[in-house]
Amino acid sequence: MQVTIKTPAEQASMREAGRLAADVLDMIGPYVVAGVTTDELNERCHNYIVDVQRAIPAPLNYRGFPKSICTSVNHVVCHGIPSDRRLKQGDIINLDITVIKDGWHGDTSRMFTIGKVNPAVQRLVDVTREAMWTGIRQVRPGARIGDIGAAIQTMIDPLHLSIVREYCGHGIGRIFHEDPQILHYRQRDPGVELAPGMTFTVEPMINAGKRDVKLLADGWTVVTKDHSLSAQWEHTVLVTDSGYEVLTLSAAER
Ligand code: MF3
Ligand code: CO
Ligand code: CO
Image (cartoon, rainbow, N blue to C red; front, side, top):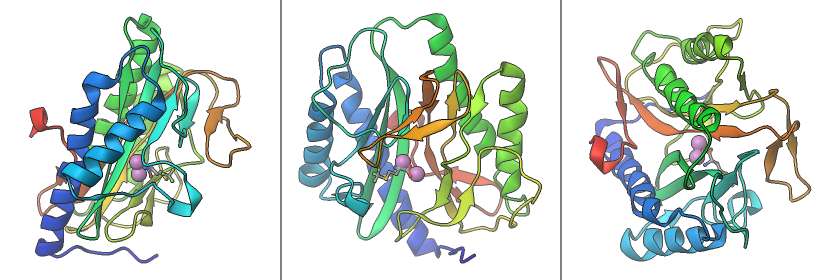
């Protein structure tokens, strides 16, 4: 496994890419309302990334992905393709943004709720965000990569929700998806030791029903097999000398 350590100058570039990715989510938030299509959200994010940020939307043409962002609605787990589908009251949606700035990637996603959603649905969204933070809080030099997934599983198991296993977090830098893999569940192998200068994502996907997923015929859209709702949150994180720095905080959190 080839894990890259970013120099201070490279960390500054990652910080900038992360900030831009978060800014896209801040920008698009007010438009994520009933009646909008996921294509319209894609178009608005694409134009903002290209024209305002002078950056590149990493998903576009990545291994053949046809759009600039991922839009995963309700039982879609991840990698939903923007389309003419209109959001309606009660829907939940994950918007996953990855930008490339000066050759460096920033990757982050958030959940948005459309109008009133029922309390069990809101709980899934909130618990998934907390699962991401529980993973992130494990990050410090000397900890093991496996500590992240173990902590997430300890948190999720008592809640009778399930953790998706087929997709994981990943190292990130000049390359969109690089080593190491960040699994969101407990494993036998504690994994590699974390060291300052590593950058990776933590992006748990949590299902209201069973953990099993299915890939649709479009080759991208991942859905829950039982059609239960699924939520996901994602940050890009830097390992620092004393712990972690989240590179994709919203402007309000910075
Ligand atoms: N942004 C996703 C991730 O968190 C990857 C999307 S790949 C795409 O790793 F091709 F679907 F865009
Ligand atoms: Co990612
Ligand atoms: Co992402």
